[in-house]
Image 1 (tube, rainbow, N blue to C red):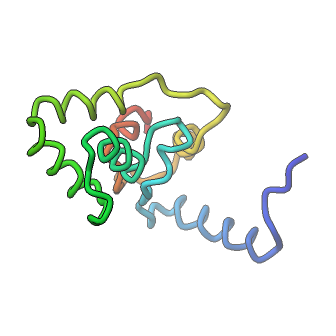
Image 2 (spheres, helix red, strand yellow; image 1 turned 45 degrees about the horizontal axis):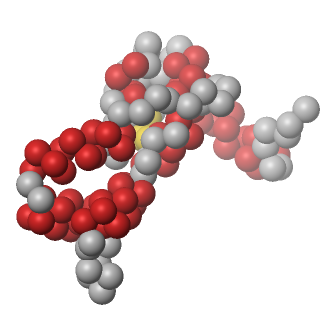
Length: 127
């Protein structure tokens, strides 16, 4: 059986968190990495792909906002939109239970979720 906690301190932290959740004193904040486990690209993955396709200058700072603006200026907004859509609208990988599945199982979880993700996977949680 896989060990869930590194040590007793981790286990205590988890138990404290669960008590806080059960008292509805916790709002879930999902970081950008949670969607990666579903096979969706990160913002930096999107930036790299758009930079490669758009011949983005190698000496420029590689951020999604900068690369997307460059891509739009080089081609057009419609092409940018279609390309990003093609990169993110692909089948979700099924690799067993995901963080989303685990979140949906926490009945006491406050229905407010704050996320930095660009995808809409949290809207599919049945909270």
